[in-house]
Image (tube, rainbow, N blue to C red; front, side, top):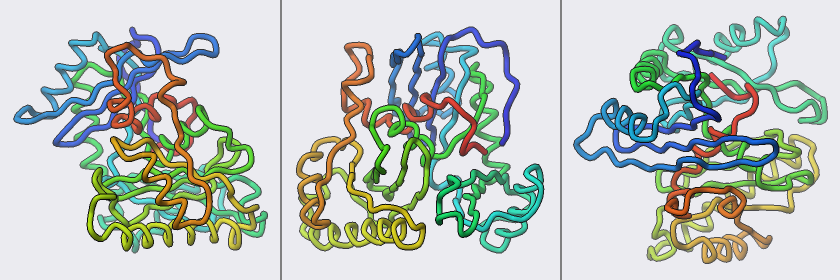
Length: 312
């Protein structure tokens, strides 16, 4: 887990940030007692602007210089591996995992930043201890860090989308009996299984689901493939991890076909599928639309961070 000591914080709350060469997604959340407020929620298309200039512009416009910031990595910028917990001292786990996964990496092991987060104690019914290992490319990570620091933001942590999604479900749903939460995207989908705010299982789903997926001629074939991947993950959670069956399945809000998607997946899975509606539970300025909130879900999840789990 890497932490950066930035300039003195002059802004309340936490900024969640998701960046790539095409756009910036930024969410700024403050906490007052038990109430959350979404102070800013922005999706900024870069067009001909550089990432550096675009981020500087947003920080200046919204007076966010000095704000503590949690960066959530893009899916292409890291890998996650489920591995046995090495039998070493806690302080040596990350180093031991580095050599355990070195042949699985798509980069030289010397260039990898490695962090681990353990599964809950009752995962796999205590038959074995497992950890998730996160590997990110150090040179690319350092480029992002430099851009963020030069913008005036104070980078305090780095997360992965799986943990941003975990933060959303922990804040806006009751997962005490277990919850499968799925984000369906054109770039590839992602599924978390959580219980009591803890992440038990996460899977990247290869099936791509674009904004107009239901209108495509091959949707039923795509849907069946998607449902099969979801069901296999649920079966693994139950049979291999020794957990009670998941009966609550939710998808993240989509741009325009959420209800139809819920119904279509419910038919394929023979199980109810709901939507995790965090829109109405998060106070926001009147000019922030639900569409923008949905597009910025990962940034919002990053801004909801309250602990150190899942950072790199």
